[in-house]
Amino acid sequence: DVKVTQSSRYLVKRTGEKVFLECVQDMDHENMFWYRQDPGLGLRLIYFSYDVKMKEKGDIPEGYSVSREKKERFSLILESASTNQTSMYLCASSLGLAVVRADTQYFGPGTRLTVL
Amino acid sequence: GENVEQHPSTLSVQEGDSAVIKCTYSDSASNYFPWYKQELGKGPQLIIDIRSNVGEKKDQRIAVTLNKTAKHFSLHITETQPEDSAVYFCAARLRKHGGSQGNLIFGKGTKLSVKP
Image (cartoon, rainbow over all chains, first blue to last red):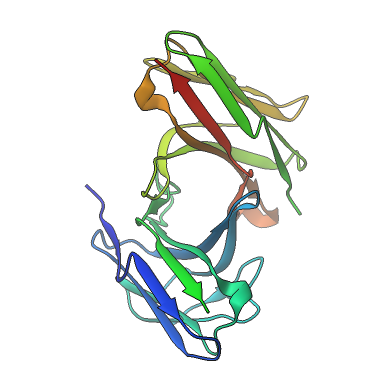
């Protein structure tokens, strides 16, 4: 089974702090994604990566950056956390090759971040 | 870009009844439509998907139908059970010019409650 793990389930930070959210997948997937989930807004894509050291902006990249130094690890960085970044953050990965089921995204359990 | 509308936002049914969740999409070039189930405290998990070359797909008690002309697709759950209670998300993926695949665009979710 594909396993996507996130470093923390719950995180509380203060305004202005630099925050790192880590995600690791164990199935050699090419693609990795970061979403945020807010009530009534569904899942919104922040950043994604199709390969090591590659990153592309999603729909709401402002205030975030990412890092992918190794294939299995994708980090989301909040350079200076703000209260409007309080949310559930979900990481996902997918195979990324042109085969059946390659586009299925597998999600981690999420990190609930609170910025005070 | 693609836009996905999902209805209803909440749905309550009696155990044993059927549940139907509907989604519409805006871009006729979308070609992949997955459904995810998110249980409390967990990340979304794929339960069924359909591609644009198929009108219906069934897996035990769940089925998905796609109407490309009307640009809508639906999730049908029959003989509902309490463990079906969760938030369900639909999504659509746009096929871009040149054949590359776009990212998933998610609906805002439906909270399904199955009462024993």
